[in-house]
Figure 1 (tube, one colour):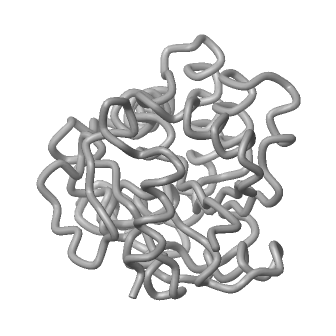
Figure 2: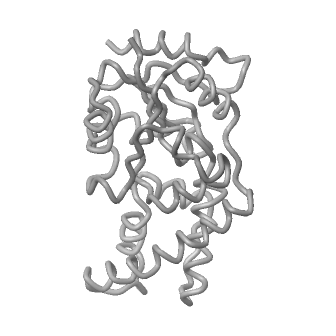
Length: 239
């Protein structure tokens, strides 16, 4: 029986990558006097690296004007990342980023039918709080039994650590859960933890390979049948 639906955040709940994080990174770079700009195509490639700080470090490896020493690059990323997150929080507070189609309906449906919901993301707690507070109000945490973010797990997706942590905190087995993701890294993380996973393609992963997913859809909007009955079907297809 399906006992828990586990949500990824960036790209799954909202198109935060293209409309939020990329914009915030670029503004943080500009404020720091750095002549770096991540256009849509470049950011799409950088999304192969999970985690904003890790993404900056990967980018800096290819930039001749970046600090030569790893410790210096890490210090720069550590300085830029909080500012980038603050800019992102301002963007979502201004409601510039909305939920993807069908997300609110499915969350409400799970609540009505007694299916526990959780969050498994390797974005920061501050980013999650900013988005969910703007969309669901100050009591957004009432919707979720467990919320696991970047600060809780050192290993980023595709490592399954975040999903294993969620299962442990929920006190359930992998066969009792179903995950929703938008990226190959997220799918790999869920499957490595033994959890069935459905995919809603986000902007940056329209043409990605999602082999191993229970199903792949463009979004969670009706009339695509992605209510609880379909989740149960996807759950059954785990094996």
